[in-house]
Image 1 (tube, one colour):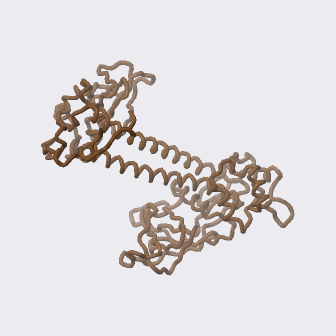
Image 2: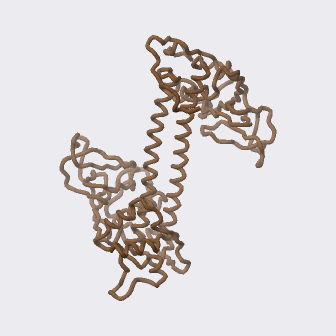
Image 3: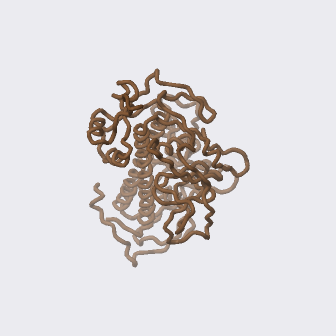
Length: 482
């Protein structure tokens, strides 16, 4: 069925009736019906299947009482055989009502209700599923209350009342629209999960030096011809390192006045400009950094944070100091990258690629990298870049956030309100590639991944809002389909 051929229209004002359903008075279209769950499904508790009954290479998937749509395990023979479009309904604990719609032969454990469809071509199972999940989210059914382990009985499930359009066609159209939107969200979430795993891998490999990054030979030739990079020379005598290192791009550096032009070229959308390679086995040295012994490439360096940034505590800015139409964004100690408010004049002016570092409470170390004029409150450390074209600020940011995630720095311990001082921040040691070129290439890869994650999260949020709207309108009958 093509969704493009469907027409959505408002239910007419004179086509409403008031009914009682599951103890609530609601308005529904006059041509819609109410039936109990038992009219659609024959239900019973699942069979007793314990962990030791599962078979590694079994052929029948077993569902248990879980919130996620995941399989408990497999068996080879079952007393209750569920088929496509039957339902498994968790019936114990906090997972009650997180229904699973079955795609093929399966069964459910003793902690679930197995509902076999009575489908006689008068209703669409996927519509019933979507309707019940909608009521679950609105907490109109499957309410979990009290201190004992919650339970849902077959009798209770059978008595749930369900509103349905009177025609199978409208039920099917509604189910198709909602299922299509649900699948879109699921695919974006899967892509988001994959992207986060890729970012985690690149963090581990690139920021440890195990995986190195360089310009391709074609990119080196282009950048040399356009004056974006030069051989990295010491004392004006010869390129740094061996001819092999020069071939790998280690022996090149970004021209000091061409940083912006180089980044513009690097991000112009064309692929194939860089390549990865493993750090050679004889290019390692052991160093102590932030109290830990680690191996890093021989051509990498260690510097304290104060070598890169001039830091001070932010200025005192309270809620009543904020101005609705102010021009300067103010950052506070928060985990999310969000703005506290705005003011019109500040004592501390941060600029592009400066950092705001939350320094109080559980938000310590959730660093914000600044994109333009901004400032930070008294609960943050404001770090102004000393950038002298020897380091890439975005690399420093990515490195610190990586260590934060691994809990190597910014550890929050004890019962008192945690605090991070400027002195402590200044003494954090940072491992950096010796060339600005490699720092820039690493930062560019990781920033691209960050941007992809952020974009996917925004898209998912929008699609979930759309999904909520569609469910609300279509399952209440406010919007109709034909």
